[in-house]
Length: 262
Image 1 (cartoon, helix red, strand yellow):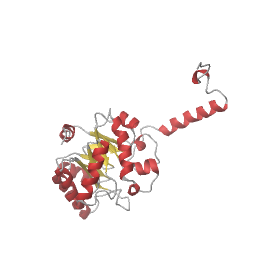
Image 2: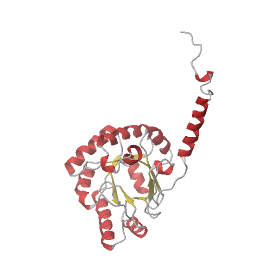
Image 3: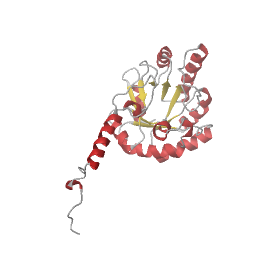
Image 4: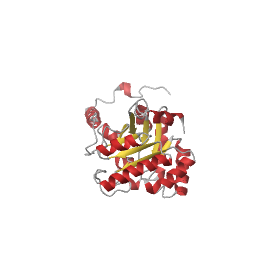
């Protein structure tokens, strides 16, 4: 386990962990100044490609975007989401994760699920591959979006899954849309950091999709907070550009290669 990840684990109960998604070098280089973790999320499927679900995201797509993000990440921990159907068994997972690690130079990977994927997690950590877990709503497999942790059976399952993930060697766990009291209980019960999304401030850290944060998505999820409406800024700039072109105000001489001698 790298020093970066060891230092991250030490932040538990001491300092809140900041995590955001990135899909390109430019955005990643900005996040790198502020985040503990930069996640190349398979959320890029809906954010960039308008896919109906993350199931459509391929390994090749994740690798290509991750290579770009790697160019912008120097200080943060860079984690890559493993796409749907790329870790169905330990052998398949190890092969695909090694490819991702080799091609992208990332610091670790994130996998969705609990008890069912414990053999996979154990295989990866045995091979010294840092793994971030993910419980609660699982976008790759859940058919319906609904908060987790309302019923006793569900509560017990999630509690058991998080403990199993920790025992298997995961260095942190994302809790997606987990009920407030349950997220608090999980965070208290395990010795690795919890990263929440829609799971209250009880978690050790928080993650959001960058496009939601900057107002470049149409997300209506309750847990999303828009910090700036970048779409309005872009719209204003494009409108100004259009008007200047139509009124022959752009380009001026200084924007043109005029009177050059060859």
